Length: 59
Image (cartoon, rainbow, N blue to C red; front, side):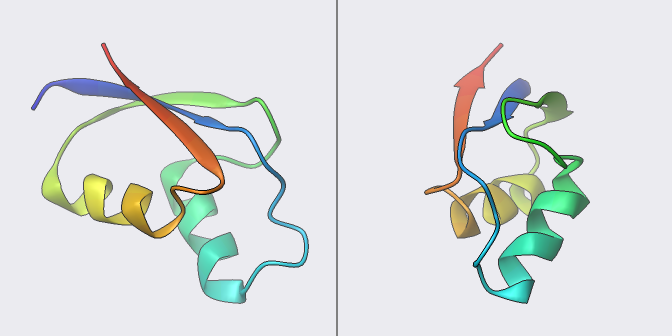
């Protein structure tokens, strides 16, 4: 898979610590912030854990 764009669409306030750390590991710290990352299996697994907080689109 190529590059993917991940955008945080919901706040992580009140979420479990594990989900907060996953968002930070993806490089997301604020709402509506976007990052472009390589679509590796590790990144896709992290996205799957916080799929209710982010939106993903393939570039």
